[in-house]
Length: 399
Length: 159
Image (cartoon, rainbow over all chains, first blue to last red; front, side):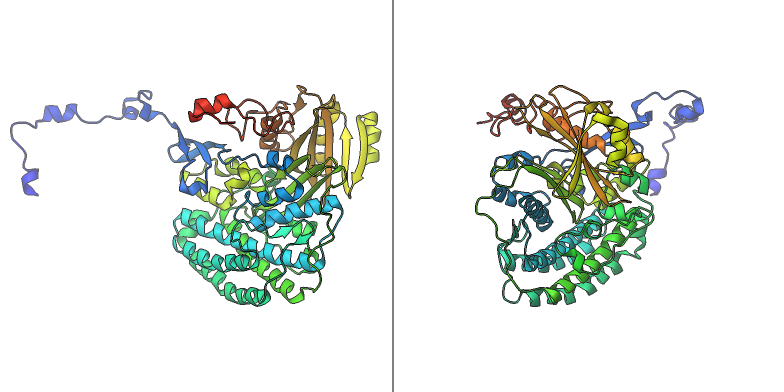
């Protein structure tokens, strides 16, 4: 230590040290001169960035750490799903919808099948509707678990990821036993379900229902009162009720802003009118409220599944569907409450075997538009938190 | 509601009907902005679910342009439809619903319908230099912009 501090008597003197002394521009009262003094900086986040949950590119305009504005660049996963639909028959298009929101494929299929059924003026038999509800709610749970794991990971809590993926596996096992596929399940057909439940399906589901509630408590134990989690989520990405409605935001994001609206209650489809469940809502519209809403939704999904398994009726699982589907000329809009929000299908039939037009109203696409308003004035790290809390799936944003 | 609107606009409302229990209005393009404004403010259709279009190349007015609206207080949906010719512009609904921004950009991207007064009307899903609008019926499914593929990916498109 002392060696370094010994000064060479020849070199340093009072004159030179004064000349090299740093004088700030503020002291001199001079205007900003170099590029380093400029306040605004445009930086690019993504499309290859693990925290953007896929291929989302966000252009950020920053002042230091503060976000002044954002622009999303999307379309990297665009496959032209709507165009493909016009060149396939109604039945052939069914598996394609699974590839949009690939973490909630069952919901996508449900919305599409029900829309075409409405157009054909047929209805799925009660047993098929119950099977649909069970699988869709299991899928909602799986989707929320995936969201929680990745969202917490983005914010810096690594443990929940392992817990949620471990438990989500149990749901995927049920799917695999039911229809052979884990993710892009193609579980439903127009008019009902292709497969009868396998031997021991009810037992597996009930086993899962008993297994998972303590696990959800465990996730909450890790996060709900965790100080770092609270600091990173409370008052972050706030969106007011009025803004949320004007931006067409749906699903848990809308409910966390205080709008008690869930399509399963507002306009019940499948067999949802038969079950008791609550719609959890938040008040502040911040990231923490969205987290609480989704956690509660998981528990409500379990409630629905239990009622459905207990009450599941016997009977056929497929309605009488014509071999060649030619819905009468007309238009239909049908939407369901997917895990991310309102998933709608607008289908135009010209009376032929192929749809004239299929429009998908994706919840992720519309919700992502709220990113800009939610992160203005926040810090860069909050952008990561907000992308996570919006729960977007780029396959659905880009279609 | 329909009676009131008809009284106000007369022949501006061309058709008010329902199919499979879903209500829709077909109106003249000239009154569309005013009508959407009235539907939001007067009839409480505060949530714009979707904006989309359908292409009918054999018609003189080639495009159906639709707004799907929902009212939280009434728990009711309505579809408002106008018919426009190719090249005709439509007033943007962004001052009424902020959500119209991206939805209109998508309609522009896929159909080439232009919206007057849109803050930033450009392609959203396809690359900026893309040619053509894929959801038009005359855009073939194997047709793609070969120039774009050559310039940006450096390969023959092989189509």
